[in-house]
Length: 194
Image 1: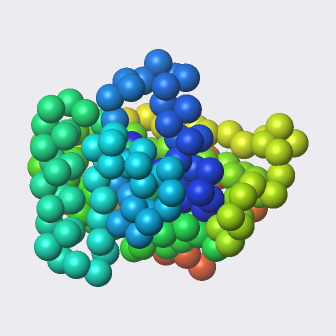
Image 2: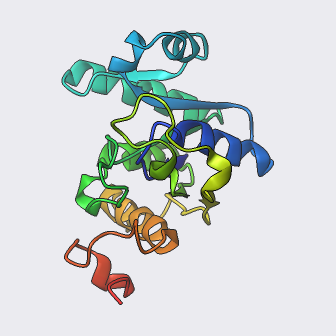
């Protein structure tokens, strides 16, 4: 299971490209918010690709999405999740408690490793409130760092512990302009406030 920070609509193609370029499997599913089924072209791609659509306001939809992802993970299909659940408006990683624990519980329930993915500078290409990219990506050095997999099989680690570990791994790779603010919880644990 891949988990990534999320600060631009461009994050989706960047993550997919990085996984494929790194020799990763073409066999993946994304969790996307249900609102995206109203976006032309993207909605068709999401439905035809069998990706998981989630209505965050509907508990039944959340349970169905959870079960679909567990099913995919059991079959060996990679699931790509943006555990913050929304775009960062500033490009900075938000507090770790914003990471949705359900994503990490999914991995834990099937023993799937959690791979932290850090996306740097994508918000400069296409800020969250822009419909189209405002900068050609060749002018801004967008980088995607695929981190070391975090095992989810340790019975002493809860889903919250796994979320914190993934959050710290993502935060460590971010440039200063995207690192969480120093008053953000869990920064002191890893010395990221320096």
